[in-house]
Image (cartoon, rainbow, N blue to C red; front, side, top):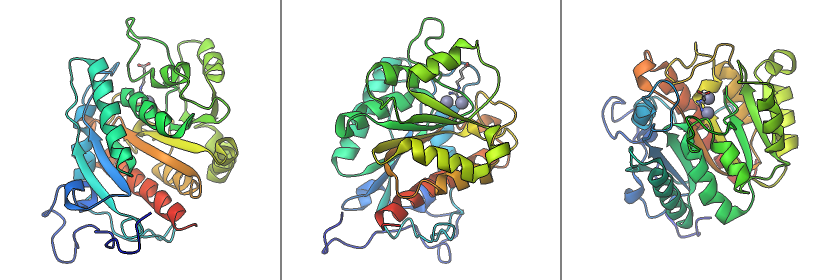
Length: 321
Ligand SMILES: N=C(N)NCCCC(=O)O
Ligand SMILES: [Zn+2]
Ligand SMILES: [Zn+2]
């Protein structure tokens, strides 16, 4: 927490004074991390897509999400909070990750995220492909102990290997579970759907520690039912929230590498995220935005709003809402 003498949070550039299409290119036109004395939340870009199994391009995700975040306004009426006034949010820029050596990129990510959190910031990562959830979990589990993962995705991402490779965007949560980073009683996927490799995938997934709120469950139980299940599963302990943008229907997020029909609406996703207020969220990511397949910033805007809601949840929780 800031001391009584620390300066008030420095927010975004005022859009009534500096046009939105000008000014800084940081997330939501916030200050850079090196422009503030300390940050409660660091937004950091992870430009990397060497772990993908289908369409490449998520390496350009961080820049696209930032460019699509220029219209965000300072007050969130849905949660009654000003996410950039209740806490210092700053943009830490992009990590320089090795595109030719996945193991090296994992180490670089873990080291950088460890440094950011040691400085007291909660990490809000913008991907990048889903491979990098693994080093994020490694960094945060060292600090907080075993973590719950709340994983929004069309996919399970608990598969084993592709072409014999263990570190890919389809495997981060199996590796995390095997490495003992996860609380196996408190993890769940939200929004999964579509074809699997076999029935065994779901059996393995349960053993690895995950329950599932399927995309189809929204049809029956709605957002309130999903939030209720999520909150009961997560409890009070530390939670890492990982949002693969392909959890949204391709109509709401075409710009991604492995799209699956039948997904969540952006309204369902944003309202589910708002329902996380009060939980002990220790880090989050928004991944798999691939701008080459986007149109009119549809996917970028969805990802920017997801990020904004996560920042709002952190702010509302900080204020004891
Ligand atoms: N994490 C994402 N987006 N996709 C995983 C898909 C893995 C597969 O090709 O089966
Ligand atoms: Zn996915
Ligand atoms: Zn994924």
